[in-house]
Image (cartoon, rainbow, N blue to C red; front, side, top):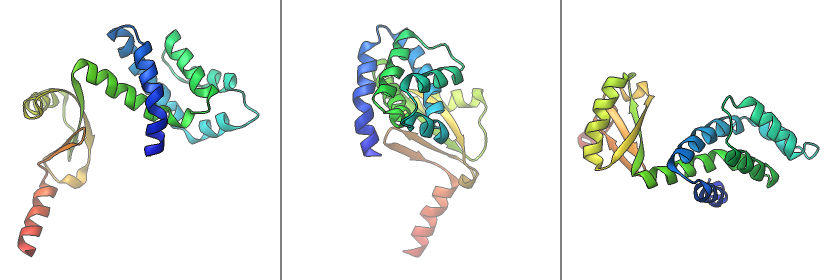
Length: 178
């Protein structure tokens, strides 16, 4: 994965520098997410990697599948990615671009792992509490993991806050075994 991150970084930085305003970047984030979801498909990558398929044909297919209109900037970017044979790096490019946009706006992505679904009102309360804990604005999303039994596990960048029942049981197991 380090190789993909290394390949993706210059592309994400170039697209970030080419974006004029924050509204352009916000739209580009949405468009890149959609393109990354399409690029994650193994059959599409095989099709685009076929030497008989031209980059323009792969572009037409991807643009047709994405249900968002692509800005001229993102269209040019996609052409560049396909011309250079870097379609497999597109999901990583989108992730790094999102990180750059978040850093500029002072927001971090937070993934909240929960044993049960969290409603939007509850998520807003949890996010407000987590923003105080992590001392920055957070863009929270929820992933349901029933194996946590209860509680939540929050990942913000490389920081982890684990208040799940599973983690507490593991701590008790270690304490009893010692």
